[in-house]
Amino acid sequence: MSAPATERDAVGVFSPGRARILARTLRRDRWWLAPLLTIAGLAAFVIYATIRSFVRTAYYSAEYHYLSPFYSPCLSESCVPGASHFGTPFPELPMWIPLAFLSLPFLLGFRLTCYYYRKAYYRSVWLSPPACAVAEPHSRYTGETRLPLIIQNSHRYFFYAAVIISVINTYDAVIAFHGADGGFGFGLGNVILVGNVLLLWTYTISCHSCRHVTGGRLKHFSKHPVRYRIWTQVSKLNTRHMQFAWITLGTLVLTDFYIMLVASDTISDLRFVG
Picture 1 (cartoon, rainbow, N blue to C red):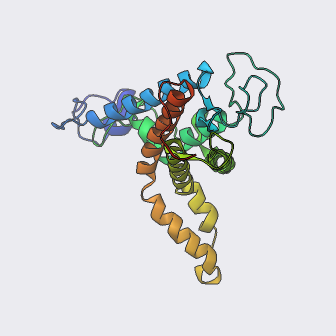
Picture 2 (cartoon, rainbow, N blue to C red):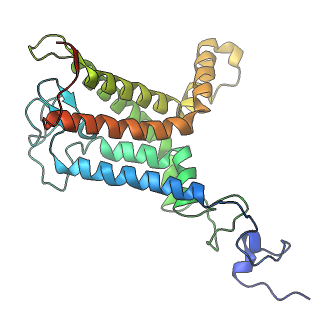
Picture 3 (tube, rainbow, N blue to C red):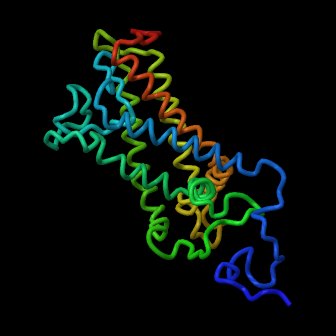
């Protein structure tokens, strides 16, 4: 007769009726590699973005109107001249408040509650579970029904905020077509800014919430051909949501890093026109 079930035995892979295997897993492949790479990638972005959001240096090139996405919109009197594309309705801010304090919390909320990012950090950070057929270290699982995970249900609202911020980033990219003489100008920085914005839009509209907004409540697609067409296209993008999630982390860093180099006069912007 088997030994009585302990508290840990009561759930998950150790629950009664499951095979009594004490090993964490019988897998012989490097199952830990994917979670490790995920947490390394996310940690690298968080560290870089946090530092750049608070240093308040080399985030705007006055000559070409290049504004880093980590500082948009810049609405405080603490912003350098020209960086406030929508005015300065807020007074100077202490150093512990990022200049893009209106957008960064919503963008962080949008990313953290994203369906793909949930999968990524559930597996890599919380190890719930770390990989298929690998026992998780938690004795209980309550799902997204209690704090803090119940906040995940607010993803659709963060999506609406992300759309507004994407519009602002698009405006920043458009007015950056500014030459040194005040007229039209076009350089490598414009290519990077526009590319970043296009990929951010792709990531945003490939979101599961966007898919639900466009066609999730429809009962008869035939009665709503336009929305059905939009839903179809969003669904195609949705299959690449994971790739866009990672690509946009890279383009955000690339955009900010390039603007930092130009704004600090470390390099000169490669100009094609103006």
